[in-house]
Amino acid sequence: MKALRNNGYTCALKITAVLLFTAGILTAAEVRKPNVLLILTDDQGYGDLRYNGNSKIDTPVLDRLAKQSTRFEHFMVSPLCSMTRASLLTGRYNLRTGCGSVTRGLEAVRSDEVMIPEVLKQAGYATGMFGKWHIGEYYPSHPRGQGFDEFLGMPQGHWDNYFDPQLEHNGKMIQTKGYISDVLTDAAMKFISDNQDKPFFCYLPFNAPHTPMQVADSYYDKYKGRGIDDNKTAAIYGMIQNIDENLGRLFELLDDLKLADDTIVIFMSDNGAEGPEGSRFNAGMRGMKGSVHEGGMRVPCFVRWPGKIKADQNIKQLSAHLDMLPTIAELCGIDLNQVKTKPLDGHSLAPLLLGQKADGPIERQVFSRVIRWWALKGVEEPVLASVDMPYPGAVRTQRWRAVNEGEDWQLFDMQADPSQKKNVASEHKQVIGRLSKVYDDWFVDVRKVPIERPVIDIGHSDWPETKLTVPEARMDEGLRWYNGWGFAHDWITDWKKAGEKIWWETKIINGGRYKVSLKYACDEDMIGTKLQVSASGSSVEGVIRAAHAPKPVQRLTRIKKKRFVQTFTTQELGEIELKSGESKVMMELTHPANKTTLDVHSLILKRVD
Image (cartoon, rainbow, N blue to C red):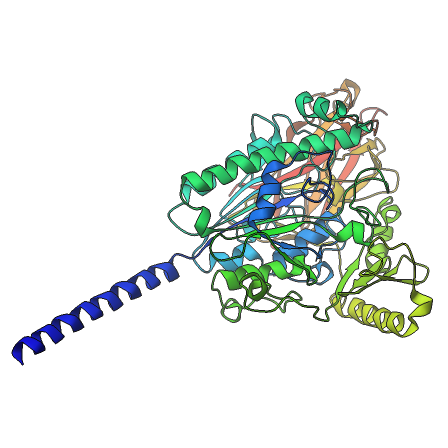
C-alpha cells in the first residue's frame, strides 16, 4: 500500500508538473502577442499583380504571399488615398473622422480619433511607420501624435523626388540615400530587428506606384522591352516590381529572425489603378482611381499568419478597409471595450480568418463617396462645398452596386455582371429605392460633425516647431499656387503687391517667445522687401536680406505631365510674443522692393523659451 501510495504520489507529481509546464507555455504564448506587419501600396490596382491575371507584370513575392494567405476577393476601400488611410487606421468612415479631401487641411483626421497604433500601443506594442501618411501633417494629427513611436516618411500626400529623397524622421528632415521604396523598406527592417524581442506593429505604406513616374532605368526599360507602349504603365509596373523585391527582403528578414510564424502580414492597396479607363489591365472591372465603380475601390487584400490562418483560401464575403482595426485587435487578443475607441463602422474579420464562421453571403452595405476633382481648383469655398456634396457616391452589398455620379442612381448586379455593363435600376426599382435611401441616410449620419479646415496647433511641449506650409494657408485673391492646384508640393507665387496677405488659423498651445523664419525664393531686386508677421496682438517685421533665385524645374517623370519643383532658402525674420489660445497668424507684404515676385514655401514658428 505504501508503495502504491508513493507511486500514486509520484504519478500525481508528474501530472501536476506537466500541467504546470503546459500552463507556463500557454501563459508565455498569451504574453507574447503576435506581431503585425501592415503593408499598403499607393495606386496599385487590383489588376497590377500577376496573381490576379496580369501577364505583363512580374510580382513573384506577392504572388507567393497570395498563395500563403487567406485572400479577401471582394475587399473594398475608398476611391482616393487619404480617405482610405483615414478609414483603415480608425475603423470608421473617413467623413466621420474629419477627412473629406486630399489637400489644404481637409485630408486631416481629427487628433481625438483612436487609431490602430494607439490601440496596439496600449497593449504593449512597439509601433513604427515608414512611408506616406496623408491624413494630417500637423501635430498632434501627425503620426507621432497618433501612436507611432518611430516615423520616417512623408506626412503630406505628395512627394516630388524618389531618388535620394529628403524625408521626415520624427519631426526633423533628413537626407537619405537610395530609391525611396528601398529606403522605407530598410527603415522598416531596422525597426523590426530592433524590436524583435517584443510585439511590434510595423506600418509600411509605400508611396509608390503613385506619381511622379520615377523609377530606375532597369525597371522601366524591362517593361518597355515587353512591348508596353504607354510610358506611364511601364513606369508603374517597374515601381511595383521594385516593391515586390523589397517585400522579398522584408519577408526573408522575418524568416531569419524566426518571426514569420509570429507575425500577421497584411497586404493591400489604397484605391484602384490611377489612369484613364482602359489604360492598363484592370481585371475587367469598370472604373479607375477616383471612381465609385468597382474598379476604383476593389483592391487585393492578403492576410498571412502561418499555422493560425489558412493558406491559399478565398473569402468571398464583402469586406472593407473599415474592418482592419477590429480585425487586428481581435487577432491580437485586445478587447476594444477596454481601449475605448470611437464607435466603429467596421466589423472584425477574425472569425472568418480563423475558420470560426462559415463563409457565406451576409447582408452588408459598404458606402463610398468621392470629391469632385474640379472643386479643388480655387481658394477655399469650392473645396468645402465639395465636402458637403453627397455625390458621386455608391453603396455596395454582396450582390448589388448602386452608383450615383451626380445625375441619377444606377444599379448593377455584381454577381451576374461583374464588369457593370448593364444598368438594371429600372428592372429592380424596389432594390434601387432601398439602397438609395440607405445611402442618403448614411451620408446624413456621417456628416453630423461638419468637416472644416482644421485649426493648426502651435507650440506643443513635445513639438516646439511648426512649419506652416502655404497649401494650408488662406490667401488674398491676387496670389496663386505655382502649379495651379495647391497640393502639398506647391508654393505661392506672384506675391509682389503691398498689402497682400496670407494667413493660417491656429491655436497657440503654449504662449511665449517664438522665432519666426521664412522659407522663400526671390530675385536680387527683391532684396530689402519687408514682411510683417502678426498674431495674438503682436507683430514682427522682417526684411529679405538675400536673393535665392533658381528657376523652377520640371519634376522628373516618365510622362509629359508638367509639374514644377523649386528649391528654397530659409531666413529668420525675428521673434514674436504669442499668447495661448486661438489666433490668426498673418503674413503681409508691406514694402516690396520691386515688382518681381516673392515665392513662398512656408512660415516656421519655433518656441525659444
